[in-house]
Amino acid sequence: MALTVEQLKEVMKFQLRNLSDANPDDITDDTIHGDVLSGEGFGTANPQRIYKAFIRYTLIKNGEEDKKWPSNWPQLSVADLADKLLAKS
Image (cartoon, rainbow, N blue to C red; front, side, top):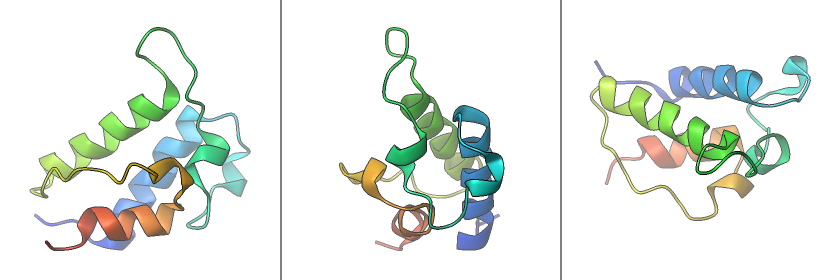
């Protein structure tokens, strides 16, 4: 079962709401990841890494390719990253 961009954006926003201190109502398709996800944590466990792992897991479990993420992904919006992750190679 393939994910649509809209479905992936909903999963991404759900995870952002759970992993950030931002007001959940402020998380939208235009939210920039680095504005709401901290890169600080304990050892290798930090919100950015946990978020990325959740999204990668979601993609793989839904039959999508496990693509290399753009190095600047924290500077991308939810919509922009979803488009890049689901773009066909």
